[in-house]
Length: 166
Image (cartoon, rainbow, N blue to C red; front, top):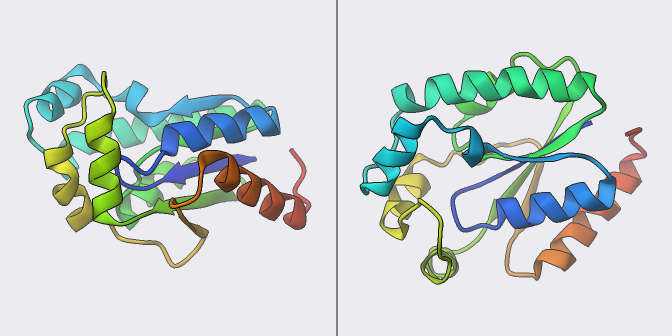
């Protein structure tokens, strides 16, 4: 089982994803860890990534997803802002990917981004991500106003209702 926790920066993808992975006893991966250094430097300088910047990163993640699928599954936190990005991510998977999109108000996102430290994403880039975001008409849309624990419980319950094998 592959679960991809997606959304703009500040939605809690890494927090929710890591807690969910622990609960499901699956490995957790953060898509940000797979960005090439050039992308990290570009974002640190306050410049948003473009599709050309993202292409090799997404293709690399697609290969990893296929590998994780073979090895029993994983939870991946990845922005996956556009449908074309999600298509690339799913391109090498054999099974169904469960897409969980975290969503919240701009005000809440800015508050969260401004309160975190040690992350390369600058809150000034949020509007660029919000303008790029194409909410999927599939998967699950989850509001981030609840606590991470409550969100993880909600997702876990939905997964149990699906009765999916690990």
